[in-house]
Image: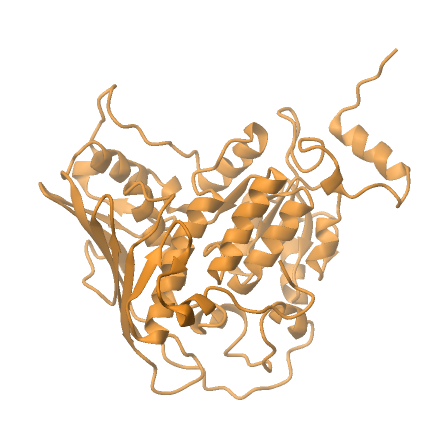
Length: 423
């Protein structure tokens, strides 16, 4: 009599066969790294800083492993889970844990590309924090890995999963402000600082593994943890942090998930002291074609509705304000109170960003902020910084993903990684 094994029984029997069993990537998709509709999805959590613990709090009942290069973060994660789960310093060991369906990557940005590609190749679905990557080459490698390995990859620009962004998308998509010609984003400045001296890393921190694929630099308290955000090498400043939220909502509303701008021009003011090198003020103008519209990133810009960041959408009939762009999105009553006609435009309604990812692990559908969309938004952020660094306008081919007639700019679309972190 033929006996049918469920997934957990299959894994247990496979493990008993010994260490010589083939790697997960050699199994058909759906056997490993994808829960069946009737089973609890098990997650592995890589990076347990601020956003990492936020995700862990929401998924602690299904967390099956924790990973961080900083021991105090691991200990904090273990307290959140409140029961034994394996703990790792090296994420590769977590990826080898065969019962994990999906991994949540909430590390500093410079690790996103390598970890996401390796997770896909290990047969895991992926939730990776925004921005998707630090280079355009890495972002495209993430897209290819997701397709090649049949993985569900959600990028953590959670604004699309808020009700306010949904209502704004619905309102504008049904002609509420007419044909949109301009999106004006605003955000407050990058900070100036980074004045502490280099030192030995604190106990419990593997600094070499924290740096990972980046070029080696000495440990500095003003370079580590959240302060990585203020270095062009690591975080890229506000445009790659909150810009990945604000512009994610904009590209969704403007139906731009599969394309990009034709030109990018940035100007900004460099900091006058400290090791943080992101521009203090910054204005980036993106020109899109077919359809023609313009988006500007204004740092600082003119705040609306008392919000520190957001965007104004300008149409030929009216305007609409969308504040925030992350989990704290807001919009005006005219959009909030709008109900689209039955035969009108109805955007996809996310049940919540993490839940959308978990649902898609079961259904194998694309999540609302799938990796192609996340890569395209990340590209906007990266090109803005490249234009600022070079001090000139870039002409961009969004199909070839190359700068036309500018090989110096094209060399900045990728960068060499430290061994062994190559993708």
